[in-house]
Image (tube, rainbow, N blue to C red; front, top):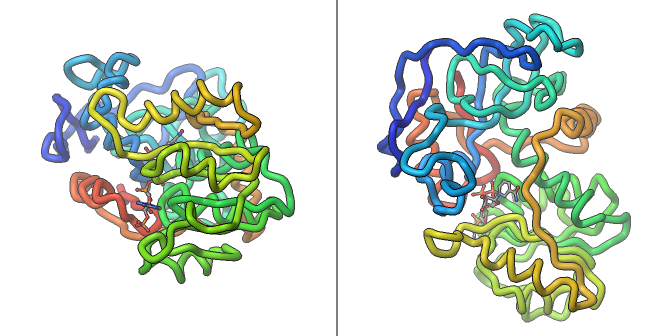
Length: 323
Ligand SMILES: NC(=O)c1ccc[n+]([C@@H]2O[C@H](COP(=O)([O-])OP(=O)(O)OC[C@H]3O[C@@H](n4cnc5c(N)ncnc54)[C@H](OP(=O)(O)O)[C@@H]3O)[C@@H](O)[C@H]2O)c1
């Protein structure tokens, strides 16, 4: 089968389209014929091996332990492991697994779900990592409540476009922060207000928020806290600023260390790859409350171009590879 493979860490130039063995299906896995694969900043981290923290965390010290890139998938079940009861051959599914930039992937059955019926494979592949992160950030770590004022920093990106829609679905009053050319798009997703960060700095405005989700990662903790209500919650989700060792995680660690000593709740998390939450998203998508926003679609052979574009940091929603 064809797959996007890398032998060493590096820039997108290390990615090669190669013929490799089709994976075997494990007892608790489904073999999926991938039709589309989502592109996420996590792919960039595993491609570059940056920050170095991820190498120490077990992804491979000198080279990636698992050479096929990609984490999000949408496709059709081709075979099922002997312990899998919830899927049948032919089911259309979406979810996460290592190595989705390939014609076939063997995915844990617990990390996939039936695809939302109203989405194409391309649209469904845009959902898993970004929407799971937005959902868990708002619901589990932000504990979003109806009527709360919620600020989404990075509202025009992969996670942000889902977070705006999910925030509205939870009954919150949502303000999105993005750059000038994306203001209309974020408003069209349902945001009650949009702040163009090129023209206005929300940290200098009088409005305070009950919950802030930060995907952009380029504002100091003190500034974010200033925009929170006295007992508000800050959930730091990401950001690509910071050195090669820790990336932006030093800010997240500082937030966790400070949180017990202040009234505001300062939180961070790594999203769980969860088939159950994919079913929650399936319902929200099928009811029309959430729709993926796709900026560009690429062929599998153009995976490197997709990652270069993502690395510029200004995608309008999601990027997807068709396989
Ligand atoms: N914690 C987790 O489990 C988890 C899971 C997935 C991803 N992440 C991390 O979360 C981060 C965001 O991921 P993503 O997929 O949403 O990335 P993305 O699609 O590249 O979006 C990033 C967004 O940040 C915005 N941005 C850049 N500078 C900004 C600024 N000064 N103020 C406000 N917004 C700004 C950009 O909007 P404009 O183009 O409008 O500037 C862009 O839309 C990444 O660091 C990623 O690694 C964390």
